[in-house]
Image 1: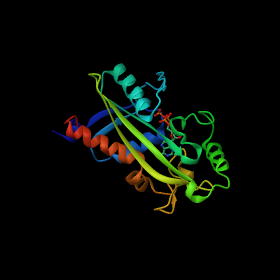
Image 2: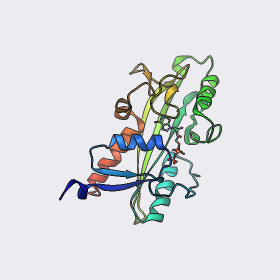
Image 3: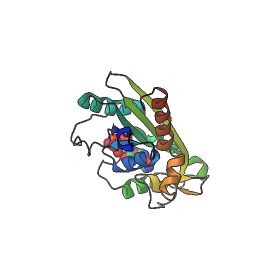
Image 4: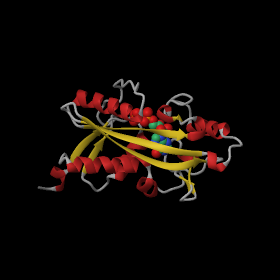
Length: 206
Ligand code: ITT
């Protein structure tokens, strides 16, 4: 068997290019070809994310595309929980202040809401749930988190979304200042995706 034959294609039910890039990097070297909704020509499929948790929304996305394609499909539902804001934006992270609002504005808004709030009360976490939907109707989920604090200004140019305001005390910088490799090693997405990969290996799906 040559390398080409061993490579397995997995559809990821996401339209978010930042996530897609990280997913490809996290499992680089595992002989998996990740195909996005754009790659599949499915970007226009309407998916109603009306779940009440990251788990529910991840399953909704994976299930919809699995039913449509008849394939095993992964999905990522993720977001930022700010403790001082009662865990907002949480599952509404992408829609916070409007889906098309630039992150420079969303990030500054969160910084402003925390104006005058002391370091120890600026705690926050990124959450990522990876769901896998199988063609037989079964679904499984894996969750990963990374703890941090909301910074005082945007810092860094790597990553996407809320990375420039997500300060990680252990590293002394934001996840936007980490290299992609460093972020993937410790991130919510890195943890959730590696856990899912191990589960799929255990189940001999991969
Ligand atoms: P899909 O549903 O198509 O996958 P989406 O962007 O709408 O894309 P979510 O509903 O899961 O996805 O929202 C996730 C949001 O959480 C994302 O748009 C970012 O704002 C934020 N987010 C998640 N992971 C992040 C990360 O690693 N760094 C920065 N922000 C992140």
